[in-house]
Image (cartoon, rainbow, N blue to C red; front, side, top):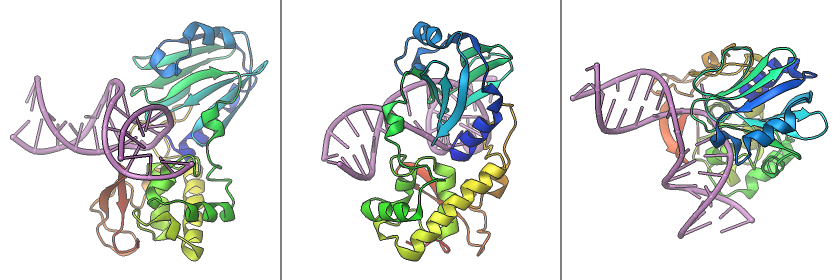
Length: 264
DNA sequence: ATCGGTACCTGCACGC
DNA sequence: TGCGTGCAGGTACCGA
């Protein structure tokens, strides 16, 4: 489901969690706990308030009263829902002093864990795609010996981009997904940076993209998918030149682009 | 140290 | 109807 705009939308939709007390917690599925023990996790959060909720790239961090964090990653199909009924794929249930928070994930690629400190894998992420300075972004491009599409998906380079927005940013910049990152300098680096920031900002304003099952914390769908210009538009005419959009694999991920507008 | 390929899991759309 | 195939917003891990 979720890239930066979707995760940002979820976090904003869950602002009401701030100050809520967790009365009880149930963790049902070991596979999404990243090795954590369900009983210990429950004991670590029960009786404590949620102090804040925020985002680092695609990770959601809920700061828990007295220190520690509930760290959530939505993977491909994860959902955090304020209210509603537990279902077949509900892996965590937090009963609050007002309402209930459910964590659902049919594919179980996401995770929910409790950690005393911010986990190392989060500290090792690159700068946020909406916070990185252009100079750092451009310098990073020059240092990497890989295709630009793969690099945009690498969370150690810049955190928050995923398959949809990487394709959309590359289209806006007129850059082919197979272009070598190190060769993008000057004006092309600038266009990519601007395209990335613009597409992410517009997507947040639209509440994210709901391709199949994404919803925010209140169960609302996003509608930025209407504005996708290449993602999952294989065969459709390019909005700029009319050429049929093509799909190729880059780093094992579907990549959609206009063969005429996007140059290597 | 960096890269690409693969594994993980469920559900859906499609063709036969 | 049912079965096989391919595809899907993700990261982690492995060997080269």
